[in-house]
Image (cartoon, rainbow, N blue to C red; front, side, top):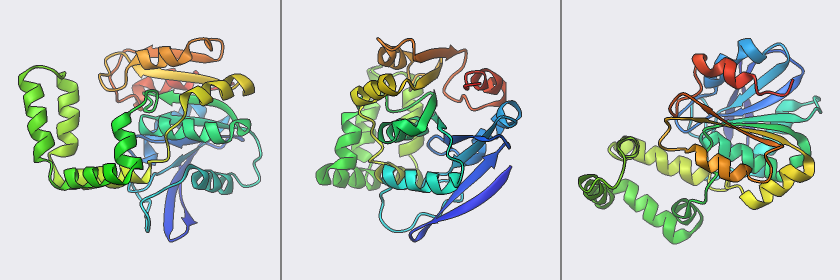
Length: 268
């Protein structure tokens, strides 16, 4: 396990390497997670693969300065610099928020991608609220105001709770990010900075078919946030390339007890 930094404009991006294999796996963690989340896969993949886990802006040791925007093309530039003289095709390994990032990268450079392994991936459905708040001036200003003054949305949430219109898991998820001022500030910065990582699902499916890229979608059976049915719907008509797997678990799948199962899906 090694820790590195790479300069990007005024920022410093932190990444970690696991394993010593020739084949490169770029790993993208979830919201609030760290590059070290992927360490559990080193015993199972480290001989054949080198896992490169990049920490997103406002996570871990990455020091993000300047504009609240990371363009997918800029991240690809960073990945190519990290890869150096290794010109083999890449495997993209994304968890939760990182799944959305991996899909967007695949959309931009499909000829460079050998396989996608996505675990409880965000981005398999169109989130109009996310698009509005992240990609329009009015929406972003409303989002910024709400993160500073959340009383109206917390009041609405209380009504839905009283009417039993939302399951308990989602209620806890929302309260975790909105009840604390620092968490709200981080949410605004992270959501805004990653706003360009929105895969076009129709285009992505066409590229998977054209380039014959193998894709594995892994979900927790008891996950109430990222649902298996989204992966099943996405895989329709491409079942020969897209595998959907459900594990007896919740959302937190980057754990030692699931590592061997997930590692088995990597191209041998």
